[in-house]
Amino acid sequence: MELDIYDVLYNAVQENNITLCQEILQSKSLNLQRARSAKALGTPLLHAACMYRRSDIAKVLLTHGADISAVDHFGRTPIQILISLWPRAGPWDKPGDTMIDEIEREFWSRMISKHDESLKCLLILLAHGANANQKFNDNNSTALHVCSHRELFSALDALLLFGAGIEYRDNDLRTPLLHAAKHGIHRSVRHLLIQGADHRVEDKDGCTVLHLLAGSNRMSIEEMTSLAHIFPQLLNTMNFRTLKGHTSLHVACQNGDGEKIKFLLENNADPNIKDDLGRSPLYTLLDNNQPGQSVLGLLSLLEVTVQPSVHDRDGNLPKYLLWCSRTRFKQELITRSRSPVSLYALCIQRVIGCLKTTRRSVLHVSRLPLPLTIREEIMSTQQSHREFWQKLLFFVESPSKSK
Image (cartoon, rainbow, N blue to C red; front, side):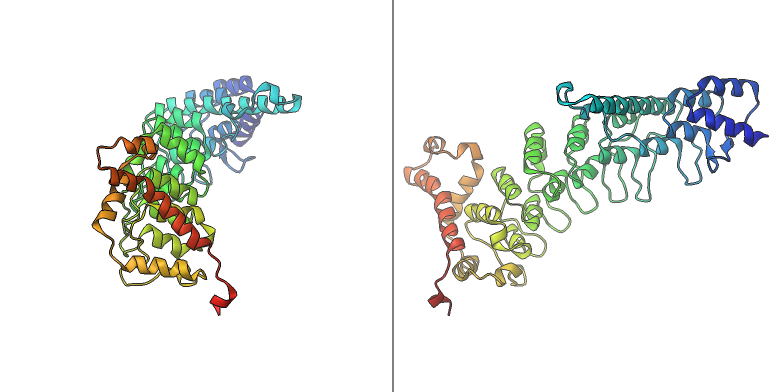
């Protein structure tokens, strides 16, 4: 008989019949902590209310003793059910009314309604003691990690309001911010930084937010530039090294992302730092990418590097330089890598490196309190370096020379 009652209640939840739910709960002495519907494979009624986003019914069930921490046959709590089924589109995704037709308007009306009901359910669960730091998987990702991954900002804010730890770490020691940066989720990174997430944290490999942004193929250069403009503190970790000695520049070079390499160099990334294997960013670029496939990154590095380093600590060359068919380019790199440069050239390059990109114009350099010859050298060095390497990189040997 009890199972029949629970099935009736389950049907009432499905149909959002709060009146029937209240009548049954008030007239019957039911144990809601053990109440499960046989019709729905033993699903607890509170789980069903969260599944169908029945916020008012969820509140009634909790008032009558439903267990906020009960698990279904998959081991999921009500808050896990709710966030897992959260609608992906929210009010912030809706285009302007002038951009949509009647069908789209109806779609967005339904989606926003589902979103609002989901948020009401979440606030009710949290107000009744649901765990705001609920773990979601074997990697110990919390509800905030899931919300940041799926860009569920209203749920994320509600969890923070009820004490969710913005710096909680998963098994990879990644906070929600590091998780969002790893997956290149621009809006989540921005939202978490606005909410006060610590940009200085590192994961188990020693990667900072900037390392992960530089290594994410999903994060565009426009998005990365925007984040650096709004949150300039991100650039404070520019030359931080991972446990293997990699800087953000090494990471961008590994992917061969020329635009990110150029951006990092313009913001004072050091092209001379070597990792634990003695590999410079230039070595890393040529070990993972063919020279012709990352021209922008290659020229950007050579433009600011006085003495290119294309040998690791064991004397090995990067594999794509070994296979390089541009003989003069290859020979010049190897020769310069082995030949020490003058102290004067190093000083000139150091002065250039200390100048912000916006202050490397002729006007600004001409005002530096330096001798005229040095100012002239600064203005000509970068351009001459770039032109020199461009000619070598794009030089095509004649058939007679190649034989």
